[in-house]
Length: 120
Image (cartoon, rainbow, N blue to C red; front, side):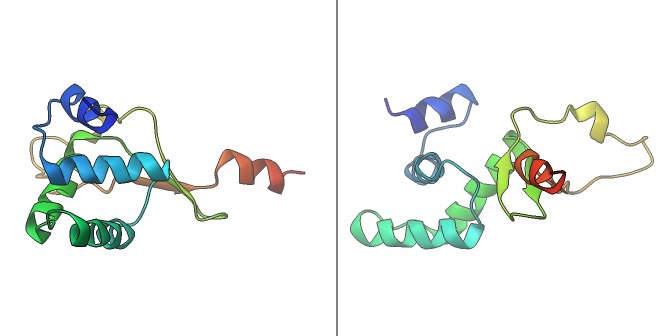
């Protein structure tokens, strides 16, 4: 079993070709990437292997966003990092009078490396 397949199983996600390809690409990049970049990369592999269905791709991304962690985007160097732990659901809950439809899981600020450069 591949590392991508292990990750999917560890998160209780059913294995599919598209899900495995997305995880493999992200692991290869070793950093966060844009949807456009990811879609372009999968289009290239789709020409060589089984094509990736566009709706399946978007459902996969939605599933991963639901199951996984927040990201941090540095406003100085423009790099995006996956944060190690997800924010507990209790911090996202609002009293029973509100219905949250979506949470943007990108925190913005200045990364440690850039902060050190700026304080020198």
